[in-house]
Image 1: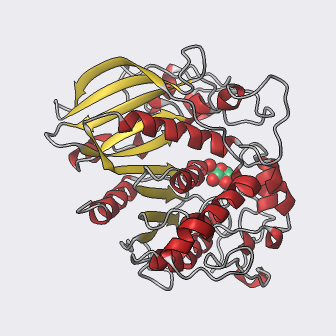
Image 2: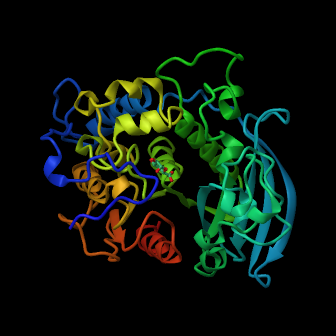
Image 3: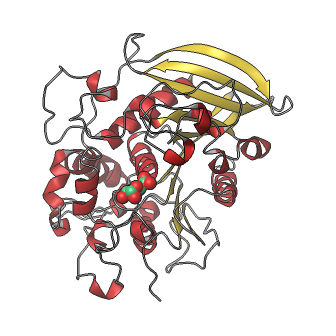
Length: 411
Ligand code: GCU
């Protein structure tokens, strides 16, 4: 049965499986020159670098070489009845105290052993995670959100705690995981300004136009997540073999690109990431490449515009983004009513990444068709479709941590 798309989505988009044109996906295990990739070594030496380069030049854009960070602890205290420590740290993303910074909120369960941590950007500011006034309102540009009193792109008191339903922090702590979160707008504001502001501004001369293969905003957010990883790697309280990156929606796309480019993340979780995330572009159902480039011209590099209504010409598709994470565990999460993000296309990219995982000697996706709702497929490529719409729910976090418990066990 066909259900209408949710408000804010494009009713003119195709939502009908029967109207998907025939297409052939590029084979993750065939190199651009036609060579079959049959060994783990050939994957690492030939195919993986080639795919990474193609995603860089054609989809997300190349980020500059990273500069070392510097950081300053702003506050530290005990929270949740002394079960956890909470630290606020200002991370100078290019090492320069006059350059861009991101405020990290790091909450770790008390433990005599290093703890696993989930790194995740948030959409509304660190202050939106809890009602606690000790977390200052972000001073960065924010998206307007009239229901929480934000109308001038400036965070206000009313938006404090606005996202707490999405962040069951105490429960995450009780399950033995830490949380490292940063407001995404600290890294790069989420609007099209010709790549002048945010992290882009720190790497370019004002007024320069970026080349068509240079980083868009998703790659900018990824740059920020990798700088958070720089900081987390320095902390003895953190288990550096159990670093997780998670993101929802546009930040789910970002989590996947981060997992593909930064192997320090041991496990990757994308929630409802859709077009430009886990969903296969060639299916052209729900949000299309043309639509996403039109609505969000700053997310991808300009080369990606070549594939507007021309998906078959793109040398890669999104199953190969999943394959770039191999052999590390990746969990793809969909929502049943999130038609805009194409749940089936999200599942299929996991399925078609499976051969790359198997080549590297791990299991892949332990399902060949979509599982029933709310059932977690807990294999190295994990998949779950939950009932309901585009969102992050406490039950999603239970699935993320069940997946992490199993997939990172014994590491
Ligand atoms: C829009 C966009 C999606 C994106 C989503 C989000 O719906 O079209 O691609 O994932 O916003 O980030 O919430």
